[in-house]
Image (cartoon, rainbow, N blue to C red; front, side, top):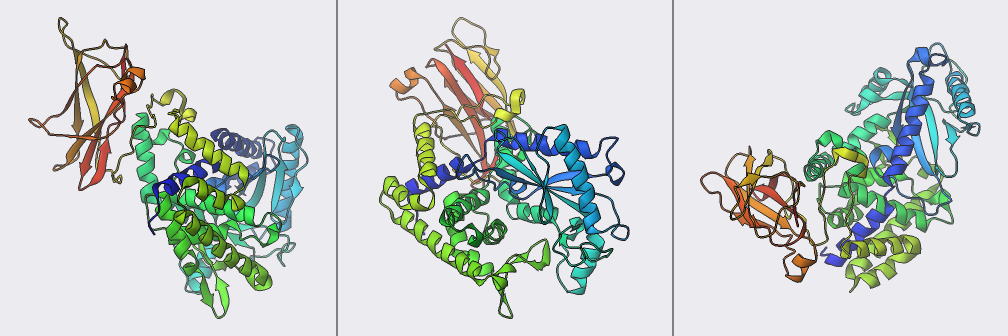
Length: 512
């Protein structure tokens, strides 16, 4: 399907408007680490069981979205994995042990008493925090799960992280038994990330190069792939469609699994979303008349198992799929961004549509996008005005390139080197940039110069595109001049076989 440019921009704006602010991620991370520290303190009744707390669900997968309204909470799912034996205690006893410690934690931190659910304990934080923690207690159980899968002739690829969990609706909940419910959130997360690993790693590497930081300095939650964006958009459409009857809405794990199965490593959001919409239902199996959406980390589990008991939920899924396909087909056919927005508003809500509009206006206004606020001093200056073009090549890292030397030469003065984002240079000087790369030849070299400021704008010299240069005497070199007052940048790109093999990150030049 051919989709106009304004629809591609619209999807990007919707996705950006759904993102959870970094401070919410950081607050949730502090909270679950605090719970982990509490469970491991000296007086903890669970300390001898070596409790390990980790996050699962949409926060782990990077597919969490802002609530529809400010009155709603973010749902943060945790696992507390302990070293224990099913031969010595029941599910009920293990769950009660965790509940005792969480009640003490709540009292010490002036929180409401934890609420017991079917599988989890819920800690509710203050309204200003706008999230709650659902904590599931579990025991490592990879050996038993692998054996059960092998006996059924099913894949054990992701079984090494399988866990046994508690469930008060399980028939053996209050009895000593080896028969406990299973889960495998780590395995599912590993599978999900494997479905987008190439694109995820490339984007993280690109962000690191732009920030002139190491890959490890880029938090995973700062990296977003087209698959994650597409899932977030689909989840919001579903939430709005079923706002009046939430019990029937397709559960997130079904949308996420079908979308990840349909994903074909597209590098654009528009290509990803329309491909998923076209193919996601083809990954629903029919096993002897039973609709089956297998858990990739536990193929014996059917994510659509409730469809047998509640057939209206199956109908709701297909009704939603038909509606979302229609909505985005109409958007693609819309003659303008405004008409596309008007068609999408009923199933995305006025608030999100207005946020998407505001996001696009901020880009058109040339607002700088602060991508790395969480990196603090580790992040370098990034110049990202609206006229700075995106690299047109897919990134497949094959080495490194660095701007090793920058030399300024002005009549009457000796040439000297200068640093990125250093002291301001005078106008009408000559600049020479030299780069080194370890990418094996042959390759092409491009440079991107980005100017800012009123002088450059008035003179039509903002630039922002890509200029190919010839390698002279084996050197990667670019000559420029200091023409306009302001902050400017230059970056070197190595392109091999029409793929972006390496980029240097921006070198900032200040001119007074």
